[in-house]
Structure formats: C-alpha cells, structure tokens
Length: 410
Image 1 (tube, rainbow, N blue to C red):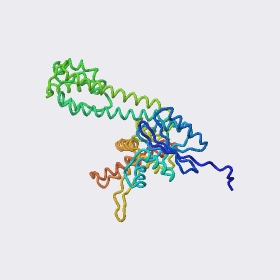
Image 2: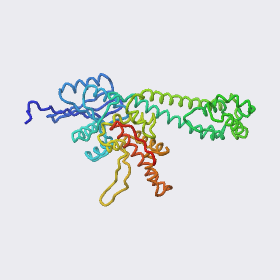
Image 3: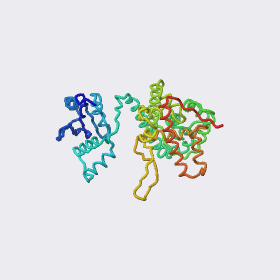
Image 4: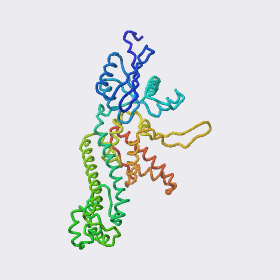
C-alpha cells in the first residue's frame, strides 16, 4: 500500500503560445476549474515574473509550447534553467487538433494556448532539449552558419555562371574543377576579361599567372591552354578601369570571402570535435566527413536517447507512411515529418558512400538496381534505401560505441 501522506503532488500544466514580442500563457492548477491567464512580453522582468509565479505553487511544473522560429528559445531556456519540465508540441498536431476542437481553421493566440493545454492533458507532447543546456548550441551555430555560407556561395557561383562568364569569358567555365578551392575566383579576379590575357605574350602570361593558379599538375600546360583559349574568346572587351570590371571583381571578391569563411568554420569544427568520441565513430563511416558529422551531432544531439533505430528514423522523417482509407491504399513513401537538415545530411552521405569502391552501402545499392540499372524510379528507391541504411548505421555505431567495420568484397 502506498501511504497517501507521501503521495506525489499533482503537476501544474502551463501552455504557452509563442509570438515575436509577447507570449500568451495559460496555467492549469490541479483542483481548480478556472485557468489562469498571463501575458508575458519578451523582457527579462516578465520572464522572471513568470518563473517566480510558477515557483510559488511549490508543485512540479510542466511547460509546453509550439516552436516558432527562434522566438521560443529565450523563454524556454529560462524555464529549463529554473528546473521546470519543458515540452514541445508538434505544429502539425496543433493545427489538426485545433480544427477538430473548434470545427474551424480560425486561430488566435489565446485559442492556441487552450489547444496546447488540451494536448498536454491527453499526453500529446514531444521532448524538448534546449541546445544551450545540452551543450550543443555551439555545434548548431557552426553547422547552420556553414550551411548558410555554402548556400550563399552556390548562389553567387550561379550568378557568375549565368551572367558574368557568358558576357566576358564564356570559355573559362571548362577550367573550373572544384568548388573547394578559390584559385578560379582568384584567376578571374586578376583577369576578368580574356583581352587582359591576350594583351600579353604567352610567356609573359605564364610568368604573371604562375602564382595565381596555385599548385597544379602540369601547371605550364594548363596556363598555355588558358592563353590559347583567351586568344579565341568571344567575350566582350572591357577596360581594366571600367565599372563592369569593378563589379565583376566585387562579386569575385565576395565569393573568395565566402570560401575563406567556409574553410575557417570547417577547421574550427575539426578542432572542436577532434577529441569527441561520437565524432570519431561517425567519421569512420563511409560518406561522413567532418561537416556531415558536425551536422548529425548538432541536429540529433545524443543518439543514445533513441532506444531503437526506428525512433531515430522517425525523428529524421525517414519512416514509411501510407495514406489509406477504406479499400484505397496509397503508395508507401517517406513521411518527411522530421528534421529536414538531418535527413538531407544522411542522404548526401549516402551519395558519397556509394561512389566509393567497396563498402556495404555500395554493395546494397548495386544489388538494388541490378534488375534494371537504367530504371530511374528504381534508382531513386535505391538512393532512399541507402539513406535509411546510413541512418541505421549512424544510430548503431553510436549506441554500441564501436567504429564502422568496412565491408570488403571477396
């Protein structure tokens, strides 16, 4: 028999609708039908007032909210720091529950707080791990900033590819090999028009451009090829002091700056994680390099909190879902209700892994497409299967604490 005198106190439920400048708070107190409403502004004194008000109840407190941009982070951190249990509600579940309860799509902040409180009462909540309290905030900032810079660099490269090169040096594109180095941008910054090159002799150009192109195999032959290409180029003639040349160089300088920033972030990520055991385990998997490992650790946190790999697959949105109604059964496909950045990282890691010579990912891919290698639908399913295998492998090696065992064909 459990002694009623030592029974655990009931939990205070707190539903918060997050907004940019103010948050609507609805508090459910056990034993009272009337719910308490508060409006909390995005100010430290209001946060402290809410924390003190909840602490005065002298009962366990569970708080839930819907993630809204990054506006929830400051308040969630304060509540977690105060020792309250912080939960998350799914945006999709919130919308569907609101429609079911109110028979309407109409919404407002107080109504959303009521719906969140209802979801708390029926247990429809998710875990919330505050990045700052869990120690993953720095990893997330590195990962997200690297992603922003990489996207900006790709966008800028497309601008050069579709605007500047067709105007001033159309033939130069074939000399671009990799986005990892900035020698091509440095070369175009020095010679934005082929007429700058053809104004010199071949020997003068090779001497002048020798240091610009960096370390290259058969550098003299490469520079000679560029010189002959420049002499027959159809690019528009511009003068070195023209505004067109200045604008081209301005964009190229921005591209070189983005490449330098990306490289600095990658170096910092390696330096930060080189002694991390989970990082070492992840980089033992084919297709996972420093940035992919950084993204997985930043977005997933500690993978040991997922008891089974199916839970991790669902967290990534890589679980299978089928629309079914009566006798109708739709096509089974990925749900994609999960972490999109994590799902994309695992997909890209799988693409790299199947390009390597011999490993279990390459073997699975080859077996999957062996029936019809040119069937695009079959290849797409094979890529999806490889991404799911990558997710299972990532979860497995972290949970077991053993590095990836390479697969070798007999």
